[in-house]
Length: 277
Image (cartoon, rainbow, N blue to C red):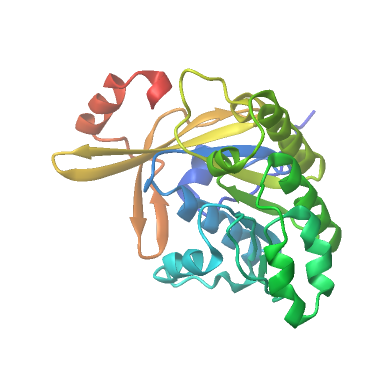
């Protein structure tokens, strides 16, 4: 019996798709982790852009950066992110826009009322909103958003900030994260959750519930920044287990899936305990 080829979702980066043996498995949640400046957000934008090129609906949930800064940061790449819908959920959001490509809110319970609010009443409504942001409130916001638009790709940037901003603690956050990942999976969304390098002393729920972990690495070698990428986990498929060199260019991230990481970089990488990589 001939095996049926497994459907894949392109990340928009040929080298990464090669490492994943064709791309991500659709409808599953994945973690994108790494240190600051390693290329995580750029990778996620390319992932969403690829979906837009293919006629899909893409959503970027902005927690770390306001939409204006996000657009400015990727403008140098020559990308048109106007077709990517951006949901700004940071509690400090000060404005609301009803443009197709930009929605700014600060709390789930205010989303519906703001959409019908008169222009002169919006400022006062924003002042009265709760600043709390939790995995549970974010899930409710996404549930409402998905009732209006059928998305196929979602990025949440970042899960680390979501946890820091949440008023909940301990098990409440963990259960909220688990519920959020399950919700997006049941909605058949291919989703990327951006995180910083995890604390090796704690077992983060997203690390064992996600279907895959794509890790970005950045080291200083001889006064030069070296970047590379590795696929730490990819359930349901074979994948490249070797780290591959990564470059951030004027056209975005490029990964050479056939090239090995330099010996000096690999030596430094091997010297770092696995839980800290």
